[in-house]
Image (cartoon, rainbow, N blue to C red):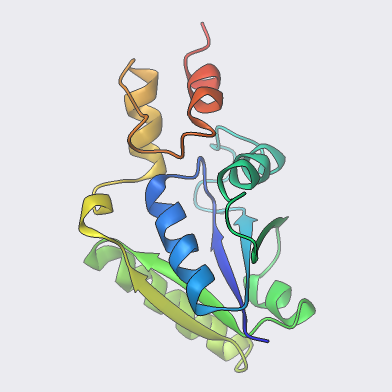
Length: 162
């Protein structure tokens, strides 16, 4: 069985993330979306790991071979502990590639049995990021085209408090 991880901070999950997850679900027998702590953004997340996990669960109900978990350690340790040999990363722009490529080399040095697979995003998602979604929402804009419909109201309720 070919199993893969789709890791990320997902604060919150966007349609771009969902697109990569859906495509990964067609390439692998089982996909685990792993909500991770981004130590560069530590302390600045809008949603807790548990809330992000739940938002993803609501968004992937149509994908029978996809599950969700959260983890605060090294991604390759999670992969090793769950007998997973592939990491799937979505790429939007060249700067994403530089960062993700560097991480993939570090991961390979830590755990040679784990391979990283890069999936370029669709053109319509090139601009899309969780930060942009949050900014648009906080300023009263319509985010319904940027996030899964199952969670749009949850995001709006959180970000437009007060």
